[in-house]
Image 1 (cartoon, rainbow over the protein chains, first blue to last red):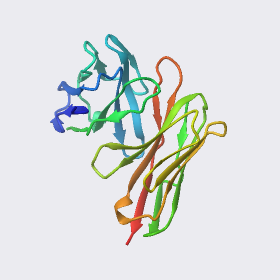
Image 2 (cartoon, rainbow over the protein chains, first blue to last red):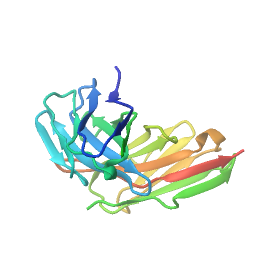
Image 3 (tube, rainbow over the protein chains, first blue to last red):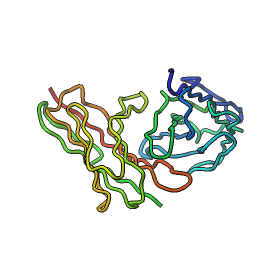
Image 4 (spheres, chains in turn green, purple):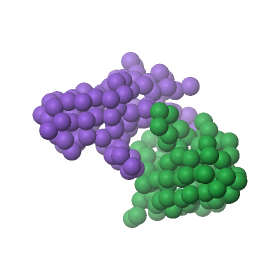
Length: 112
Length: 113
């Protein structure tokens, strides 16, 4: 039982490049979410999913895409990286609505 | 829209003190409230989860209470230690189809030896 696994842990991108942040969980959790954490802004929800095939936008979705083709995986795609997307990204999952969330260890992304 | 507030943003105390960290939220339609700990440069570790029907939860030196009607939770840390130094985040999970988690900005705690 590995919990929530995020890869990579660190990434440097050039402006305009695209990339995918990977998130996988092996706990059969229905709910999965992506957050970004910035100094002074706290944790903000980017996108979330309530099950395979179902995704929706959070508070700050612009510039990001998600899909959920399996229960286990919830990748976050940066379409054309911008310096404003420099942040720490966390993936989280929860079994059911009334359960707690488990977080991954994060991806630190720098866009230059 | 749910808003979660944690005040103060930072706290410095001598070792051995008993601490109370506060969290307030605006919408009482929640499934639960979760307290997390975050060490510098690290991820979030769940400390305690309180369901909306519960009044408190305990784990070791930690005790969290919930008053849903007034929109308040407290995290009590007994006999604080330097190893307790970290940022403590409160998050509430709204009811409804999406049941999103909304975070406060956290309280950065420093426990001085």
